[in-house]
Length: 306
Image (cartoon, rainbow, N blue to C red):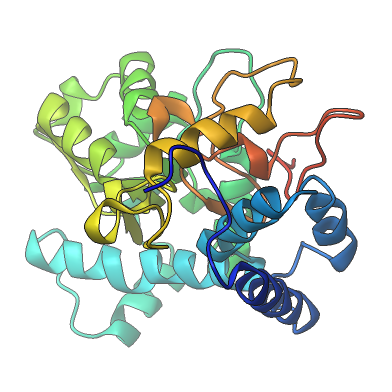
């Protein structure tokens, strides 16, 4: 391997094919929420051959969940994950999916959904998740309960509490949420399920180990292999037969020499993910996707929307 990052043989064809594929995803509306202008502005961040190659690698690795995709994931939670969990744990006698839908439409009290909202003064995506969840599933708003009234809901007959969220990277935020909203007093009265749209395996393991009473079942699961700098075939970066992950990391870091805030450059907990929703981008992602700084860097996607 070379001692420094370089564009491998055939890099131009690869870059052109990735940009063409991305433009098609945008033009077809599959990546709804990202437009051609966003893409072109972001691509201007990359000027040299090496930079263009690295930028194409980022685009190629990028997973984007559009409104339609997110709504499909949310319907999966309500119409597949939850009824199956209820049947396995004898929470509700569900005879069929249609029977479950009828129960939902009738306002069944046994299940309630609680958005994960941490009180730390920062803007959160929990309100957006709750709103989109209601819209995607066409359910009454009373199915969504705030943490402050969780005890009342359980006293009124709720047997399963489903915590909904967009993303769990390390699990620390959800554990903080539980410290702010303890559930120890209710563990004999109800079961607790954490169903984020996406979670990293690190978060799943940490939450289930430290709580012992919350089952974590995301729709999408990420692992260390989803790290942008994960060592692929024979130790090469992205399997390119040219660069090491270490050289790629060093070169990526050089791109942000002028950046005023390098926090989470490689994502929280150095997870270096490339996974985003139309309404939020977890800070476990590489910063190159969402950072925006005048005369320094142009973003591809927003960090968060309200």
